[in-house]
Image (cartoon, rainbow, N blue to C red):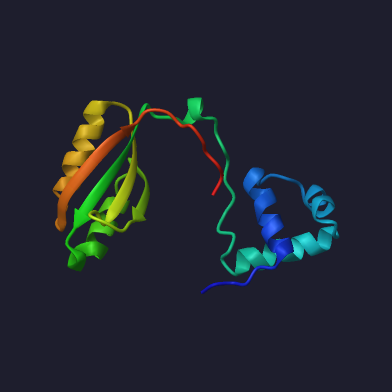
Length: 147
């Protein structure tokens, strides 16, 4: 279900992406509206599922596990649901995307070592429905924006 957002809702969401801990008073000032308006909009966005939670940001040096990799995965389409469910159980997979082209899924992994990465990729290959994988290690982040 898609909830229509007006420009003020979009601006509120953008402010929260930058700092989810901004006080309602500061949000209201930035949006040129009252505190109660911000509180009502936040509640409506939460109730409708547009805002699913608030999180903390950590600097890359504190959050990086050591090795980050992108693994492209080719699957049998009839097993997609089971493959996604199995991959979702792996804590090393931080994001899982559906993609177009030769591969069907793109998994972003974070591990402590190349040995652990190798083990995780081997386990991905054993999931029923996985046909092929292609992996690449990420070296550095050149640009990162909040989603």
